[in-house]
Length: 338
Image (cartoon, rainbow, N blue to C red; front, side, top):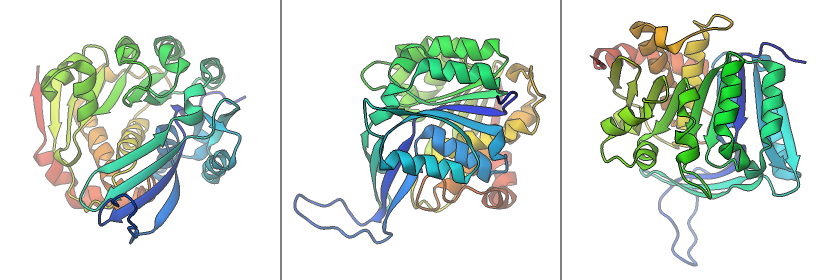
């Protein structure tokens, strides 16, 4: 039995097949060569974040992961990659579907093109997650890519309430829902301490046309709401303040996994100031919050500088970027009191 885990992650696990740096997308029947090669990488919010946390300095034994894979070679690949980092795994091998696979095409200078099979993720067992929470009683409970998790999505509020009862800090990062709408997520926001999404997700789930309005709606539930906007930085809101932070300037090779790296940076920054239990986001100082957001941004920024969702995320790379640009980012960050 593992009691007192630092971070327990639940969410999607994916085998990513990535072709980055493409000159174009092939026309029907046309051959296009991949100048940077084609790589098989572990992916999915829960896997990416877990690995990023170890690469940013947390010990694998402090991190656990609950997820579903198929009984196949891609499932073996994911399990083996997680074991390399010493992460404690609670993987279900489901028979209903194969391991999720995502074909990612990245044309140079353009955003990613995803071609995904939800696969085994849709069959994640909610009771298995709840049992793991009861056993591990983590300080932080992270849910990655709610929206693709079938019955788990329908029971999200129940899961988060259980986590709060155990004293966990809850952190949720969604994706566009599969086979249902945003309602299950929105109704669960009252039990979320930290909520992260990108700008398109924020507008879609709230029905708003302006990010500021979307941020306001989302923050009515979550204690700390963060909307990342790629090269334009982020918007964040806590009870009495709104924050606008510009982005780090880095060359983009492959943006896959940047949001997960951002969340990992937030968790690492938070972990350095946490007591074992009872931390309240509402009592965090502005200075601490800004430094946590800065580390999140730096972690997301280094992620995009190489192919793969976790390849470039290292403590050394993040610290170097913070040293080079961190003070400039802080100087141009706006804090508005409400």
